[in-house]
Length: 553
Image 1: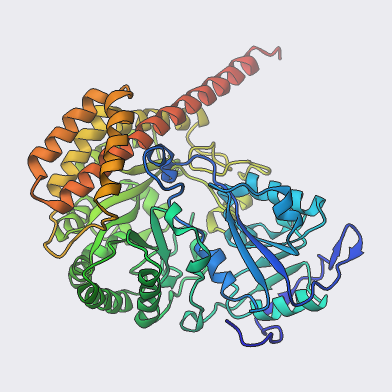
Image 2: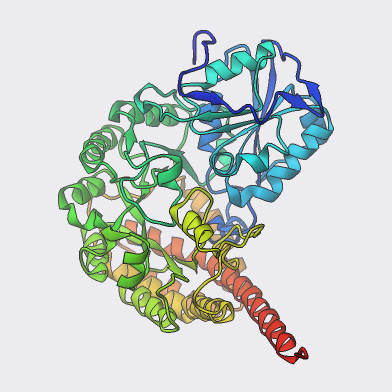
């Protein structure tokens, strides 16, 4: 924690267009003994929300808000901090009214709940402050709802902002232009979390990504030069989690773990040594670009360190779309071969896929399906292209007059926020068919079993184990919800039998087999919901076309 408030860092600029006012009145000082309520707004149901799985396990959410507990570590020691995760905790008027400051971090997907929390707090007379990815993307929107908005990263400037809040000189909008030195960042306040409510715990090693994908806002918010903690810092965080009693998975949340592959290798080696010393208490997963396949030494080190699986942004099998979007790193080699290299090395692969690039035609949906089937990727997030604010794609769409102003799209299953070259009904119906193909029960379970067959695990890999009582409780709930009550119960029992028969002596593959079995309750049902919504959207679009054609000239 900062030992004393310091002045505003040179990288911090105040934008005078948003004065320090609330309803026309100058905001008063808050004093040094603040009661601060940190709020993580709820997400709507999503592909990665695993809502169906949460029905069957004791936990209430997948991961906690790492950004908020990092900011909490920057707060003065005189502040009294309380964190509420709206995924499973109520945020009452009494909570909001009882705080001197409500501090919110949010992603754009959390838009609806974020605005509701900010507006409620303001109506109750409580000061509000927001930062995070959405604030960094659309500060002008949030300035209408929050008293203070921060664009950028907080580590090197928040002490000065906190001092200004205390003495009454805080401004409504701050923009942090420089990127902080992550080796000087604080230990996140993991102690503030209700840790037993989460299935995995996030830690961060690096920020930024060296690539230039046109649709990506990571590079515009966090930069293209990866900035890293030291391996010793991250090991310190793991030691703290172990001390706090954590015994489940750890998610290294870097947007591209191998953005600096040399330092990623150093960390993997350090994690291997730490895991050996402590009996491998945690298994790890992360996100990486597909050129991980070209780094055999790093791949081997990650597997020895007990990484289990990795998310890869594959996006599309179309070379035209990859060139168009400047995702050149995916053009260097055959992506199917690269996925197989990663699986053979010992990492199970999940991936993201996109349709709706300018160069896409009506064959793209079948080509995506063929690629996903060929690579045996069960968790394949296929959605339509969006143009997030701050991205090069957003700027290009605006220049070309194709941006749809006021679009409410917040997910990759919403209609795009720009005019596409493929007719919108064709695009949405193609996505509907693709999701139906991928998440029809037989297709999902067949692909899931093949993913186990092509995954070459190593003896060093050991799944996190929260205990026999936990495992039996979850399995019993799965059998009831999926094996007895679900419409896909025949496919469930067939898959479960095959997994037990084939992998009963392989702890790691048995664990992953049961994991993908349980996630069927989310993916199959969520895909059905999304395909139903897409079908309605297509019908509405087609009806509008018919009505337009019937209008007299």
